Length: 380
Image 1 (spheres, one colour):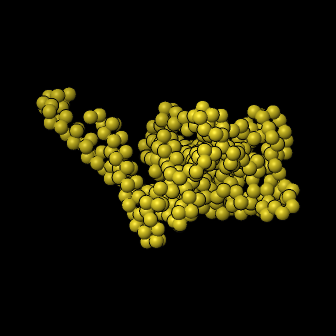
Image 2: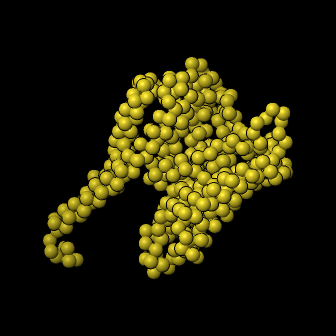
Image 3: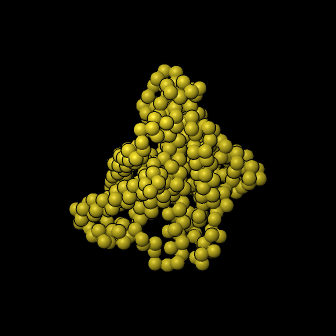
């Protein structure tokens, strides 16, 4: 069996075992909470009693996966450089509010309006990620510490901006503050027509199926090409694995640190746009939080590969969507967090085990090939 296929099978087997063990451990937690594991896991597949509720459930599931996928990509770019961009949380929140506000200040044809908002979000995220990158290459500041501190700054800054300079008019009885509403031309067209193709009713909740799904797919393909099929991707990986060796081969590791962090931040800047352009039309004081931290788990689960990240994002979104159904089944929603945490922990362990097994198999294969050759063939 080819070495690449062998490693792939070991990876899939390790992930499958990790998920099965996570289900078993979570079942114990569910029983301890006084609920039935069967009822809990049945709730995961409960999309509602009507055709409309099924469509809404599917749209919610896919909509939740889109920002998780983008967050996973942002974290993975840093991981490929052996950098831990913990600042994705702050980068996407700051980028989201600035992009939402800028988009509300003018009106243009839809393609231009949406493109400007996307560019602004990516630019803000990239520039904010540039700060810890420069601190690392010029002063040796650990990027984990720097990005954690910058998260606090960004989160509190967005809280101030949405209630202060960037605040729009609050309607009577409205509890949350928001940026000014985006014009209609800024709203991304939904993909509800896809439901017609499968004979399903179009979803009506949360803006339908967000059109930003297409942007996420294109982004995933682009990142795969950049990291796996370009000189830049090779330089990023080489610099992350061995900086001195990369420097000896003509690659400046400091330049790659800055490039990787800025790219990671630019991707992070897009995380909040699916919700803003697909549903809300503004950034509000209750804007979805925690996606940056979940992106770390998604990237780890997906082994920093776009396809794996997509699968991990779908899994996390599937689990997250079931929170309402779990409450109806009298199962604590915190079970979702337990399952997600256990899956990530076990997958990390499984990855380490499969890597060691794959290395042993490759060493054994190389030893067998050498033993089958004559001394003359080995010397040649």
